[in-house]
Image (cartoon, rainbow, N blue to C red; front, side):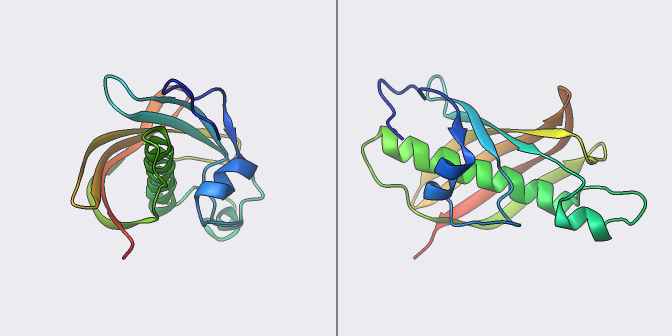
Length: 156
């Protein structure tokens, strides 16, 4: 991915996302990066398209499929990972693997079901001492369905 003038030239597709994140099916929970901003703050918008064929829908819950909240948090964390990698690339550095350390203020306000598009909106609040803090929300049809604050640390 070549980021010129601090601008994402277009969507980052799943094949390219796999160059940045170590996750693979069935645990890669971001299908596309739609946009990224670096000013006034670093922000990324990603999307996860939810199909009835997602493995977690088979057991959560039979006859009433609902995306588990913990997987919504994981999807937001993966979007934060993409933001960290792309931001590092803009700065001329190689992005490192960050691991989830802490989840604060997790809130879930609506169920997410097959057929939904889960938009992942992540804002980098700060990077300090190999740790990043992110403010995250997940939206369906423009309505917030989940939110949290994440703390991630560079893998040592």
